[in-house]
Image (cartoon, rainbow, N blue to C red; front, side, top):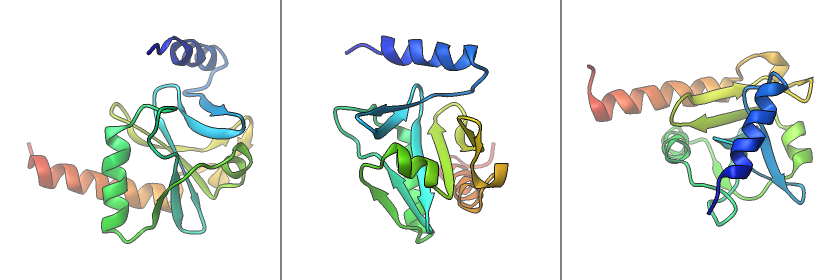
Length: 137
């Protein structure tokens, strides 16, 4: 298994001034070059299911747990590029930046160009869980 495509995509994004690139296969959003992609629509969080087309993300799994604890529906099913652009919020997760809101996609604002309500809720729940599990240092 090679991640060369992800590395090349990440370099392309950086040259274009973007922090990350969102990958898709036949119109189905899969993942970022080094992250998982979540969308929020009508109070529900959607994620591509873990399978042979994406690398499972440990941070995404923790965010799923946080969503479930907060009674936010977390649905693992395919979503399209069109659904990505129509999302109320887009959130990226990985072990380096944990949760990050996407505030712009291809020059179009997402969530009015600010961190959305669900990203903020999930980020606070994530931080609380980490503190609970690891203890305050």
